[in-house]
Length: 233
Ligand SMILES: Nc1nc2c(ncn2[C@@H]2O[C@H](COP(=O)(O)OP(=O)(O)OP(=O)(O)O)[C@@H](O)[C@H]2O)c(=O)[nH]1
Image (tube, rainbow, N blue to C red):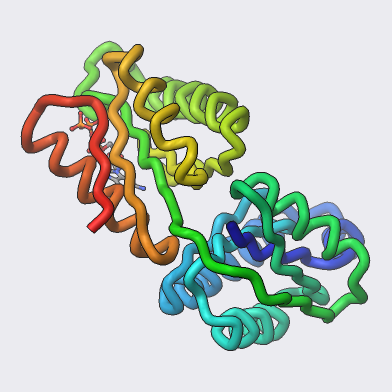
């Protein structure tokens, strides 16, 4: 599996020159950059996973090298600091990003390294809590946010051990990128927990897999049965 690792070089030093009244400026800069790179990565069939905001990931199986190179040049124009990036390759998303980060740390600012590797199918597990919006026991916004974050931590730690990379997507939605070998393990996660359901998508690239995972979730809702569903075609 392939994972593009982007690093905003010397990001801490940049934040410090903004002075004490900086947090709003950092948030503005980060969300603006993520928004533009999300759009560009989706246009080429991928998705941006913001992670720490100074270290960002793009699942890259099924994406053209030329498209990734154009995206990186674009990111350099937008970023407040130099960008360096490397395409990592490994047996699962976690190993791929690990290899990518090892490579990035040896690059000069502004340098990109996109070696050629074979493509794998992209597997996305889209997890969702049942009845999240209509649970009346919650008394305020913050309780629902805390519940969603607890759910995120549960999924993050479970999929971590499967070599996955998870990202909170808003509401009660968590997506995890995994290798095809781990699909059966995902099903067992939800079979033991009636509160959650998962749609699994297998695609030629991240956007295709995400679309199928969301479609699988929608079908589970319609059928109102089953806690997991896999869509591959
Ligand atoms: N990122 C993302 N957020 C979503 C999606 N669908 C809904 N949301 C958000 O998640 C919240 C919960 O939506 P749902 O999961 O559909 O609501 P629910 O009450 O859990 O309904 P069921 O899942 O059918 O039990 C919504 O208020 C939205 O904020 C999605 O596909 N992706």
